[in-house]
Amino acid sequence: MDAKPFVEVVPGGVRVHLRVTPRASRTAIQGAMDGPEGRQLLKVAVTAVPEDGKANEAVLKLLSKTWRVPKSNLTIVAGQTDRNKVVAVAGEADALLAVVRASWQG
Image (cartoon, rainbow, N blue to C red; front, side):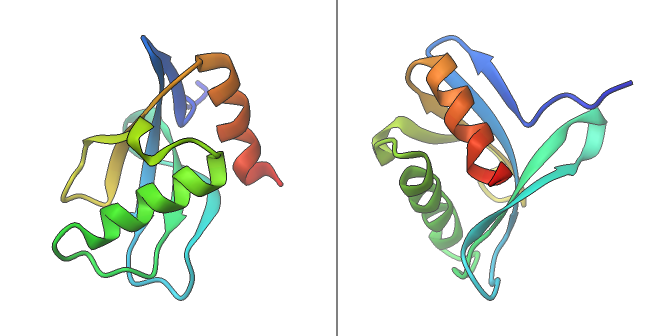
């Protein structure tokens, strides 16, 4: 059985399932990995510490810049205090799917 992709279409945009590594040596999107419950996760590393929402803020800043979407269009909808997070991205789903997938495939 194939794993569910890390990005899925939802009403009003897409949801992206992440695995976040705080305190990394550099901030970057590192690629896809197999996660729990048969779902792929997009690996994201940030240099920020996981205190007072600093790592979450760094994740949203990185995704906003990489995907060229306003930060106001990004919301962490699950995993505020967990390494595994779900980020909702508001916008046109087909365009977002393409840009999210392209962001880590080089």
